[in-house]
Length: 296
Image (cartoon, rainbow, N blue to C red; front, side, top):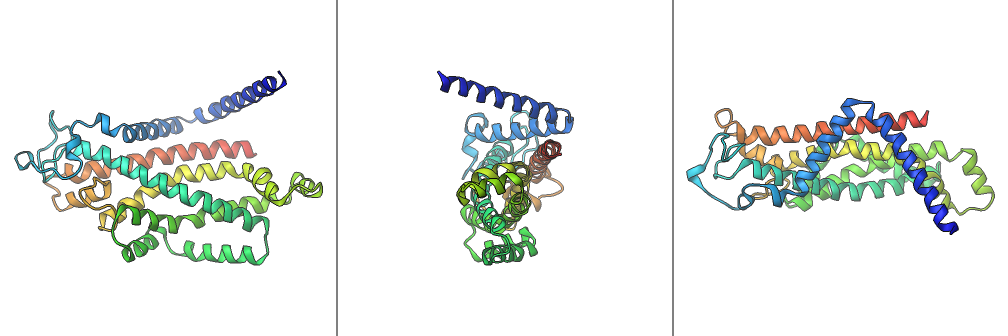
């Protein structure tokens, strides 16, 4: 009985927090627009195999009779130089882009958080200097340049582009977490936890880390667009996903030499990248405003 009461209280507490969060978030119309765009893009990517009109056009498919058709009722975004439906390939291109995002962020966020928490808690030790100097080295070089250099060494493929982006992205989360932990470790509740004998691991990952989730979540949302952009740039120069995979960057590159006459081949994939980045940036800005208000 007591367990049910405690569970009910926790549920009500979470519900009240969500209502408070949504009230603050929904006050900005741009945040709502970002949420709608982001959610729509994710849903389209997840349901891609079931909603595209021409799933057979995703990989090797040639129909020269319908090549380079402008947007029409049969192909709403036109066809490319091989007669493949541009709309179908864009939806699957979004799917591959979000796969890149999920894999990269699943690697860099836990890695950066763990290293940042350890370096911030054991500040002014050899471990702190080692991690921060390594991250400084990576941060000193623009992520796109670093990713291009790493991808150029590896064999061009989607997996290697994920590796290249991941190797360049973790220092940003390490530095963000390091800054947050460094400011929280001297709070009274942390000092009291240490005085009563709470283990260091519990202090770091149970007492301190939950209070850093806001900035980390905000950055992760903003980074979705940047990871997609870097992945598209790698594919554009031939270092990312290889044909016939319908990567958005590859599609832009394939249609670039057809401009300006057959503009739809490259313009629509480029516009898709822009819309995705805009949506997640607006969503991230909304989350940042909410967490900033909660902090102060």
